[in-house]
Image (cartoon, rainbow, N blue to C red):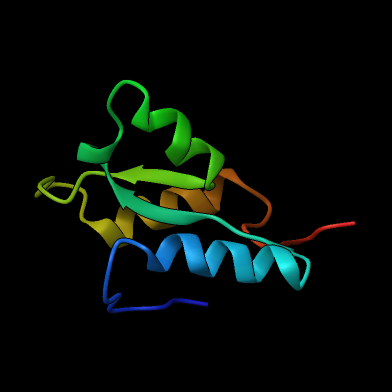
Length: 79
């Protein structure tokens, strides 16, 4: 599932909480600028994957495809 555009920075937290309540763990793509000391811990806890929006050689679609190729799934049922 892809959701866009988001209306605030709270959308990721609200969405993550909702998906956890219904038993679904998920991953999200987040700009690499948010992965700095301490914030990167929060981002990893939220299941965030870093993407470089300024990378002209490898656009976001390519970066997302790379994550999919390296992982069996991005969506799992929480037991």
